[in-house]
Image (cartoon, rainbow, N blue to C red; front, side, top):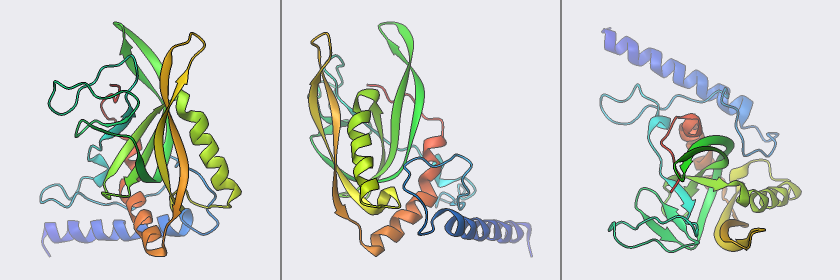
Length: 226
């Protein structure tokens, strides 16, 4: 047996052991509803399916952010000249916007990030959500400001009342609605509504995606502010 064969055999053994532990301990029917997964949660090792990169975890792949275009921030569409409309969801990879997104939540996490505003660095709290777009099956990360926490929390409360065990059992429809602060300034927040229940086949697929990409929220990625 060559050294490469031994390495492959050991990688397969580690992958199988971690998969079994992940499924047995963390994805049982008794698993309580939570959109936050601990960073030390056992996850099956999934290598990048490209020759030479197999020993790197799939979670290293950079995923696009989806953010809300705000009144005071100018961002541009893909042509680099046209201003993106305000109050819509903006994809940082394609630089396109949409008024509505249907998605499935795999994992969510509250973080603090350093952003620059007016030449000054500030610390902001954000909710980052690892999602699967139900129309394209592509993964992305919502980056939501504190102002959108209430709507997200209301949606979670509804899921809890429905006795949902995992965040990915239902798809969610996200839109954007206007709001006004105490100074009379207009801004936009996310609005989240529970949509369709997933089939057993879809649930299995979401479990696999969570195992593969769940660590993406723990990876150091570039600032998502726009």
